[in-house]
Length: 197
Ligand code: IMP
Ligand code: MG
Image 1 (cartoon, rainbow, N blue to C red):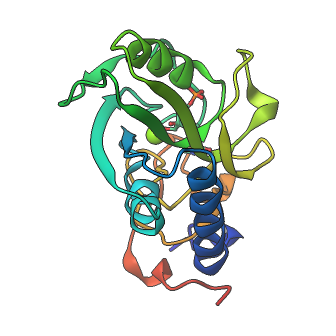
Image 2: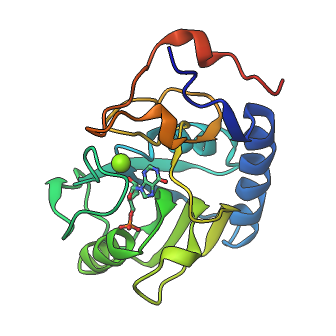
């Protein structure tokens, strides 16, 4: 068995500290009486949303939007497609889009336009990870957890071919961990303990 995820980029403890820091930064950026409307981008944003929402020191409401992802490829595969729309109207809400990672920026650009059309009072973005070297559009998140180089990463919500989202840390997917067909060779629990802690 290949030890998928052995190259840890950010440990569970590092992530916890950074998410707490981000929450404080976000909180300072809004008036005291703000209720934040968190819109997580599925599927990758679900872990970050769960952690962020629990350390944000303000009332929150939560919704989800699902868009198409990379599938089995480690590169973007075309236009963004809406898989599941919002359940709540964003009108007059202070909306914070919660993204797992900004890569080319195509997904974020699409979601910003989609949500802006709903008439929110304010619209900002927090991205857990940012890969600025891969950008095809001139777009930034308002808040960023970690900036990373052009490597394909997994864990903490991020998948390769739908696997490895449940790793509690972020790891670089090594080419040797992927078969020639692009399939990830393991997705089992033994690697779930954080090797850096
Ligand atoms: P973008 O539209 O190119 O910015 O890509 C955004 C989406 O691509 C993210 O929400 C992820 O689902 C996926 N993605 C981009 N880079 C990675 C990566 O390194 N690992 C896993 N998923 C990624
Ligand atoms: Mg994905």
